[in-house]
Image (cartoon, rainbow over all chains, first blue to last red; front, side):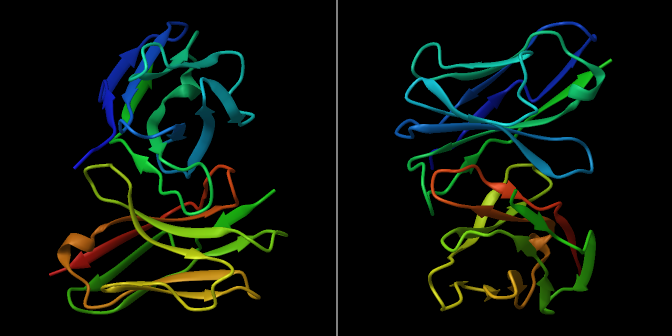
Length: 115
Length: 113
């Protein structure tokens, strides 16, 4: 069964360092998302991406964050200069449809720890 | 802004019992979609069940069913004949059209043998 894969599963970094989280969405999907979940808190939307551009982003997704689909298969989230509060589980999701009941398929997440 | 609230941080039941997880939401929209996602300890979120707000009939998927009360903005999940594999975090989520999924805080459900 097709699935969304994410790497790395866990990354530890020093504050101020750049981090890239990678995702391979399901191959025929057109809509891509990043969510994050700080330990013990709710899952928060970061950004959605369609047709090679950001379609929506939250207030969390500031200038330190960027997304890219560099080669038609990978979908990456870059954090330019990590802060302690960026420590969280980051989930990538993809969807065939961008509307209504279009199911989002989630990856297993990348745990980011910023020291 | 749309909000989704799950008032039960944790629940625990015995295997084979029925359990109901609560969810309320706040929106001024009339057409939207509601979802329950399950996040087992392996971390990947999986869709359990979905409901279109324009449908009056409650959605069911095998042992999982919902009680959708549109006027009350309530969307509870009932799990019948609970199994050990149902142990997970459960998230209620709301979506309208092409907008993002908005999640509740989650309910940690434990099924005891």
